[in-house]
Image (cartoon, rainbow, N blue to C red; front, side, top):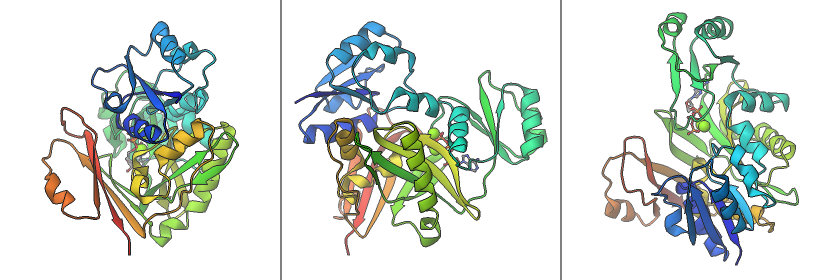
Amino acid sequence: GETIGILGGGQLGRMIAMAAAQLGYRCHIYAPETDSVAADVSAAFTCAEWDDAEAMAAFAADCAVVTYEFENVPVGPLSALGTVVAHPHPRALEIAQDRLSEKRFVSDLGGTPAPFAPVDSKLDLMAAVSGIGAPGILKTRRDGYDGKGQWRIGSADDASALDLPDTALIYEGFVTFFAEFSVILCRGTDGDIRFFDSARNVHENGILAFSGVPAPANLLEQVPAARALAAKVAEALDYVGVLTLEFFATENGPVFNEMAPRVHNSGHWTIEGSVTSQFENHVRAICGLPLGSTGLAARAVEMRNLIGDEAHDWATILSDPANHLHLYGKAAARPGRKMGHVTRLTLD
Ligand code: ATP
Ligand code: MG
Ligand code: MG
C-alpha cells in the first residue's frame, strides 16, 4: 500500500493511523517529540525539528500524501514537501493558527464571532475592554489549546491589573450561550461534503469533557446555519479532509468560536457511533476515495474524555458492555492531559 504522512504525533494522529491501517495504508509520523503515541501504531517514524528542511524532504519522499493531526505545524518548513500534496492545503493551517485571521476570515464569509479586537499592548487592551465591554476573555492569538493562554477579564480594573504576556493577543467579548456544539464535515477531492451529526459539547476548565448526540432540539435548530457557514469555509479553502468549526448556541443564533483544520476531539464518538468515523473519512478524503456514510450507528452516543492523573478503574468502565474504552498510550499522566476517552452507545 501507499504511505500517508502525518505531521504531528498525538492521539489524533494515532487514530488517523489506525483508520489508515484498516484501509491498507502505511503511515509515517513526523513529530518533534520522541514519545509520539501516533508512532506506536505506525509503520515509520521520523523524529525531527519542525524547522528541518532536510528531514522534511526525506519524510516527503516516503509519502504519497501528507496530512496534519495538529494545526500549529509551522507552515514555512512545509515548502520542503516539494511536489507531495498536502491535504488540507497549508493555507487552511495558516488561517486557523491565528485567532485573529481565523475570525476575520469567517466574518468575511458571513459568520458571527464574538466581538473581538487585536491586543499588542496595555493601551490596546484598555481600548478593547472599553469598546467591547467586560466581561471578556483575553487569549493568545497563537498556540493555545485546552483553554491554555486565556485570561478572564471581569472588569476594566482586572484588565489594568493584568501583566500582559509578551505575545500577540486578542480580546473577545464573553458570549452568553446555552450550549456549545461543533460542526464536523468531511470534504472529498471531488467537492463532496458530508456532515457528521453535531454533538452538544461540554467543557470543564476550558477542556472538552463530554460530547453527546443527538443534541437537544434548541441546539439542533442552529445547526443548519452553522453547517452552511462551515461549508462556505471548506469551499473557500478548497478544503480536502475533515474540518471542524466550534460554535456557541445563543438566543441570537450560532456564534462562531474557532476552527480546527483537522479531526476533532468532539468527533471521537464517531468511531463507534457513526457508520464511518471522522478518522476513516479523513483518510478516504485525502486519498481521493469516495466518502462513507456519516449516519448514526446508534440511537444515542456519549463520549467522555479521561483527563489528567486521576486513577480510573478500567474493569469498572468495561463492565458496562455498552462502553468502548480508548487509551492513547501516554506514558505520563499530568493534570489536564487527555489520556483516553470512553464512548457509550445506546442502541434501543
Ligand atoms: P480547544 O482545545 O478547543 O482548541 P482553546 O484553548 O482553543 O480550546 P477556546 O475554544 O477558545 O479554547 O475556549 C475554550 C472554552 O472556553 C470554550 O469552549 C468555551 O467554553 C469557553 N470560551 C472561550 N471563549 C469564550 C467566549 N468568548 N465567551 C464565552 N466562553 C468562551
Ligand atoms: Mg482551539
Ligand atoms: Mg475550542
